[in-house]
Image: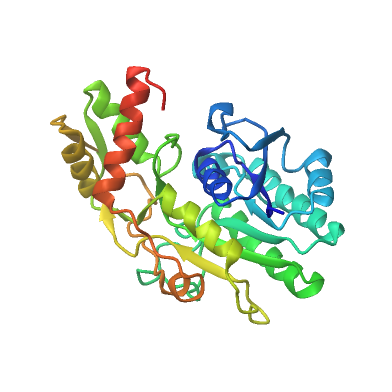
Length: 321
């Protein structure tokens, strides 16, 4: 009998890549997505889509009765700016919605491993040494980051008090095919679309801000590794958390140059005023994931940005992507 997986947000950017990989490895895959940002076209053949909010009774009932071996929880409010403008909305989805799922796992009595998609940038803030390791102090500067960290604490609580099997994957800046231009990582999708339209690329400030760009396919592999690894028990006051990135800093200017090179583009790069409060450096240390999950990224930035650009080029031409 194949293992059973539930992927929340499986019609979205990262979730669809996770669903693709799980299906290819023989999993039975159910998807919960309210399609507020996810797209039916992203749902892979062979997966079953349940259109529902993660905070709904319908989603809870599915979890309680699904006998899932793994729950990959990717559904979220992902826009940092929106979290600043409406922290109540952000917390309702990212905290309360997650609690609805965790309570359902607890009520099911089934040994489901819960893999939560956290953040490796917004949690640590700008006052730690890069590349950051999991044990460094957390200083989230947005409601989005605060919500992600709050859920990690809840994961630790459910593991200690109720015996749930929980893991947090702290992603750096994920990019790749199917990406929507949201958040800081969305700059890859934004730049691809601008190049295709022959429009100038805009960088803020000097363009020297660094991020750790990790390919969506590698992130999917991290979810699979977390689903199948024999993991040590978490420390008494900790959650099993793993950074998922490349350990390499790339500036916005370097990213623009990589995309220009892969696309054979010569569109201009324009500077805009720096954005107040923008994090200047973000990069994660991935040694723990290598050691305990047996995972490491395989896609180079040059190859990953080229594949991403080719995806957007097909969409631009109207080809099937």
